[in-house]
Length: 68
Image 1 (cartoon, rainbow, N blue to C red):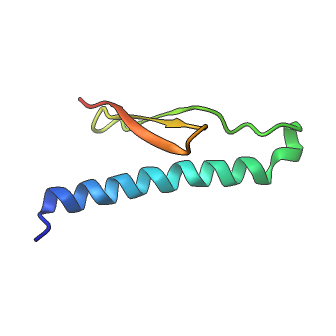
Image 2 (image 1 turned 180 degrees about the vertical axis):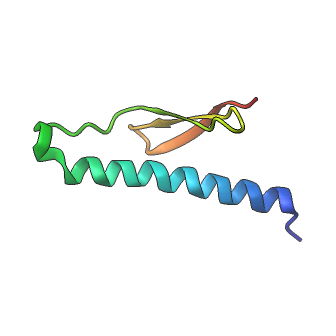
């Protein structure tokens, strides 16, 4: 049985993954604007929770680096 915390975490992980994927796709779509792919390592801050997520461009993974 899956509890509410697991569901929330799964939804949050999926949302962060989608966000990084969308940035990557948009960066590649607009590569002609700067003549360079601007998708690099970045951090996303959730101001409500204080959580910070960072991506790893080499592996395509992301991780939580700070939890309030």
